[in-house]
Length: 202
Image 1: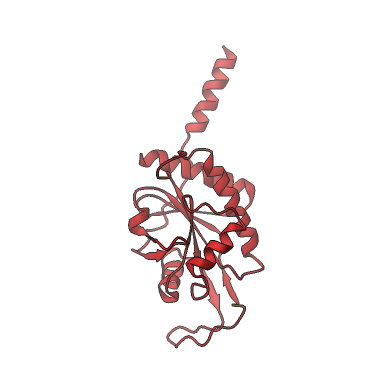
Image 2 (image 1 turned 30 degrees about the horizontal axis):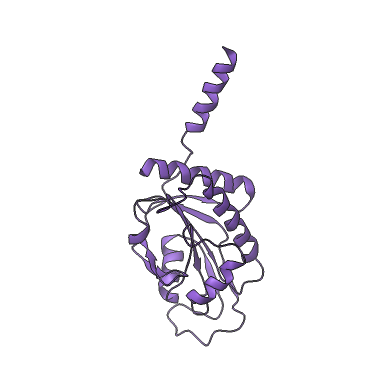
């Protein structure tokens, strides 16, 4: 009897909805993924997804973030269908879209076992990207060679960009539902939240 009670309590805990906020709604947006296909609010509508922000020439904060994203991709494989459309996705948005072409993103993604079905690498015009990341996701981008309202000078190499290294959870309606760090415990919580929102959307 005690074992049955413990089993029921465990099952109930597994079904407990995660504590998620509603931090606002993303504006409509569209970019291009590493396969050359459009990706944005229209293509992602109806299913949860998670975003982060990086660029391929970044040698400091981006490799650990990319490895964390690779780990999240593997966690998500455990509950995704083997065929057909995934129940949730990851979208890494380049904060250096002038250099990060779809071809460059594809090459970079191979290092982190990127699966385009689950993990999109998005690029698009700089101004549109900046508006989305700063105004939509409410995450910082600091780039000294760019000043608001002034023409962009020729980009230095390598690009010196400070940016958020958090994951942002988005539900199927485009609402921001939470911010997560890249450590293993936070990724486990993020994976559980994605799975919960995916089941809620079905």
